[in-house]
Length: 193
Image (tube, rainbow, N blue to C red; front, side):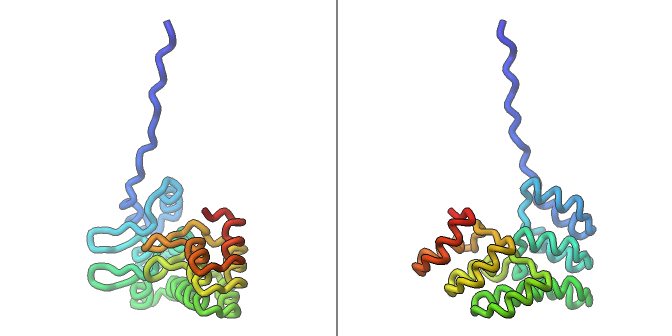
């Protein structure tokens, strides 16, 4: 008699909504585990709140940093129009507000081709994988603008080549559309598909 087949275990999908109260509590260990398990970093609660908003409201800079590094979108709005940065500013949470401001500066400077500002903001600790309006990242903006040196710097600092904007565009698809071979080659070399 052959041994009974072992049933195949399928992983249980993580409930992304748990990320919101974990961020509100400043529970960095739980937030890290949920993100590792595949939680959606931009999951929304009933009022449109996100984990990043809760981290900003609760003044949890270490949680905010982790969420930003995993692609949290600073531009998302609650149903009442509030954003993570408006929470941080209203509550006078300076460290969280600075993290969020850096992301905005980084994305804007990357799109404009301002290598000096990009370098300064990254050196100050700006998250290279955070997202802005429409899911834009510093890398997608630099690729769109054809800013080779900025793309190179962002890749050196760990920018996610697979990050997709809300419209599905990636830095690679943008650089191919702009026929920028140097940027396309750099992205492919870093694993972009």
